[in-house]
Length: 252
Image 1 (cartoon, rainbow, N blue to C red):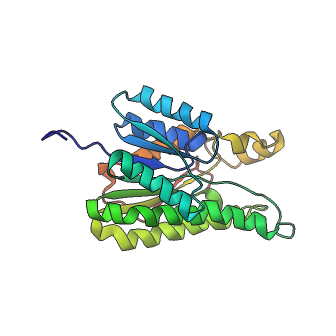
Image 2: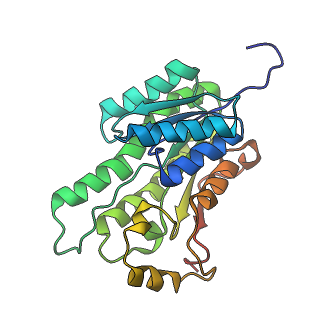
């Protein structure tokens, strides 16, 4: 790097092939960050995210990495790929998540375990894997994408709610452990956001949900991405251990 050349930050986003993860990737690329785009299996969608990031800012580098972050091996592959490509990781966005909905009395242990494994254990593994790098840099931003469901619960989603509530506890604990190393950790709790998950809802279910939102509309992935962009920036250096609701007032 040439002397006086501005440092180009590196952001790693899990579950970034579409939806909120894609919007976050594009937003951080537009901010001038190199981005590592993690995906589970949809390579075509991940490459689309990469192209959109490069379109948003031709000066950045976008890398796609296929990895199952619910496993230690997959997480190691992801983190090492980013470090090999960029030499550093400044921002970690734990966005990857799945649902396996069912009522408590009908939910089997596999449905519970699969959601916890990806949504919560995967975030833990990624946080743990980047910590040494961020500590050596004496800089880091960790942002965990939780959910309004993690704050208030939801019938038929005990596994998802538990995983998203767990992310909040994880975030607050990490914030206390790492603040002295100039590493912040915050969570964002989206409400009803226009994604593939919401698209699968019935019209009646959507109408009932919209009736609970003071802003009167679904949120957009870009609404979440803008909140992430702020928390990932230098301007948010004195904000850590917080949970920011991006929900149109739904949690009031």
